Length: 291
Image (cartoon, rainbow, N blue to C red; front, top):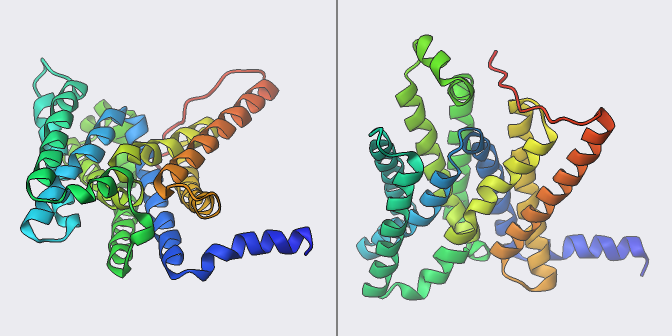
């Protein structure tokens, strides 16, 4: 067997399994969606909020199990509630968004774990914490596809305004944009995408998929929309790469995906450092292109 044929076999082998084909599709949809939205989370300095939502949706999943409704419904409800409560607490000038998430994250996450224990759902706790992308079904793929389509629609309709709010909030207010409504749209989109990502890598590792690709793209791009496009592509690629690692090395799919994200961030940092050295040093912050 030649080296080329061995490489082709290595690439093609996972695709022979139906559950792996579904996992690849889920990884691409989740990775691209979270990567693009993560850019807004990064430039808005809402990383702690993204981490909070990724943990508090465990309560939503636990409630959904207890009530016998789809997990996505419970996750979306609690994710949106987390974003709304965070905004409400942070609206008091005595508190910051970090303080709000510091209050909500442990309380709601602990509530989810406790409810799972009380209702006999504890056996599924590992799936919520570390993901179960290898077990996705047709319904999961439909949900991920709908969420991806919704995010694309939001960015097509309100992307310019969302970027303006992210980079120059006072100017957005002066131009008459409803900043509060735009915040709600963004936070709702993040909450819904996080629910889908919960299935892929779990709540503990989800922040890596939400923030890792945007960080890598930030190191390589100087304007926002190329950064968002690259982050979406990296999120999808890391999802696929992590599944290959999981298949061939026999490690958990969720941890493998996040480890590949970490490698991508490291390579981007190295490439960025080499480029800056060639440019004479200095790193330009990403600029908002809102035309």
